[in-house]
Every structure is written in C-alpha cells, then in structure tokens.
Image (cartoon, rainbow, N blue to C red; front, side, top):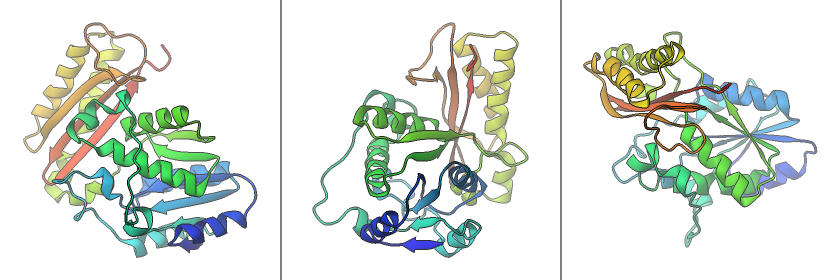
Length: 281
C-alpha cells in the first residue's frame, strides 16, 4: 500500500502504473460500505486509488466539519487488506491553496432534497470531486447509492464536462437490522442506534404499499411519515418521493422509476437513506 500526501506524489505514482484505474473518493472513517466500493474497484480495474479527505467546502457554517470523525491510522489499517491500493491523503491546504477561487456548480439536480437544506453542499462536492478526477484520472469512479443525490450530481457533472470516466453506483450496504452504514452512525448512543433502523422500516413500508399497487405520491410520503412518527427519537427533516432521474418531487400518480428518500435527525446524527422503485417499469 502506497500513501501519498501531495498531488505531485500521487501523480508520480500514477505515472508508474499502466492499465485501468478505479477511484474511490472518501472522507475517511471507513466502514464496510467503503470497503465494498474498494472491492468493486479492485475487481474491475488494474489499479485502485482511494482518497481520504474531509472536504470543508461541502460543510455549512453550522454543520459538523470539526466534529466529523477522523482516524487515519484506523483507515489505513482497514485498507491494508488491499496491498496494491494507492491512498491519497491530502491536507486542506493541498486541495485549497491560498487564492483558490474556482468552483463547480451543478444546477437543477442539486436544488432539492439535500441541496435545499444544505446550501452550497453540492457545489463543494462537485468541486472537490472534479479536482480529484483531474488529479487521479481514473477510468472508473465508485460511489455508494446511499448518497443518491450526490451520485446524480456527479453523473450530471461527468456528462456535462465530458469527463472520460464511468461512474459506478454501488448498492447501499446495511447492518443486519437495515440501518444504512455511515460514518455519522458513530454519533449515535446505544439507545439512538436501536432507534435508527426506523428509516429503513419507513422506506420498506412505502415500498410494500407501492408493490401492492399504490401509485399516489402523497400516500407513499404519508406512509413513511407514519412509521417515523412512531419513533420518539426520530425528528424528520424531510421525506420525499421524487423522479429518480431529475429528482423533482412527484405529485399525484407516479410512473416510471422513483426515488424514496428521507433525512432524519436522531440525537446528534442526521441520517439519510433511500430506495428506488419502478426500475423495471
């Protein structure tokens, strides 16, 4: 395993290798969901680069940038299972040097859901991912479907800016009780952790209504809200039934693929989750 702290060092390592590169961008504090991305990249490419960088530009002024969990030694130990991986661990100064002033803004697909509640978040995501793509120059990049809007934003950016990169969405990895794995799960107390699977239960309840023939968008939203309301520790930010491609909120009868998603606060943790319905029509 090679660890590079600077852009120049990463580029030198990149030049030493031929063949295809898979890229897994992370903010560290790795879990099994991240490792699944690395496994996919490792299976589908000759080489793998993993970045570990807590990106300040995607955090709002009242968000958890300073508190976001970090443990580089632990992360590197987990990645040691992949001996040929190159790990890029830049500093904030390396990625945003003095005088930095160029940002990437993906318009419509970033406006609702997380974008509406976290102004500037996706500008920060798109900017850092575009810069990482330029540094690593991979053939494929791997993102978890848990962050469905982020995946949509990155795919739109890649299309619009003609990056020669295949974006691979990897299914959400869940704990045995259905909770989507997330670095922010570390914020949960034992009592809160026991409550957290309510997100997945709410999604599954709406999915069951859909599979029984329900197609009214508001009925599906109300189904999710009812399950969440039964958990006293869950404080709903939003529930959504949106077009899976445009992420525009659905009204009335739905058709085609739709994304069911939500953000819920449980204690210190703001958790998100989603599932997609109607993929096959």
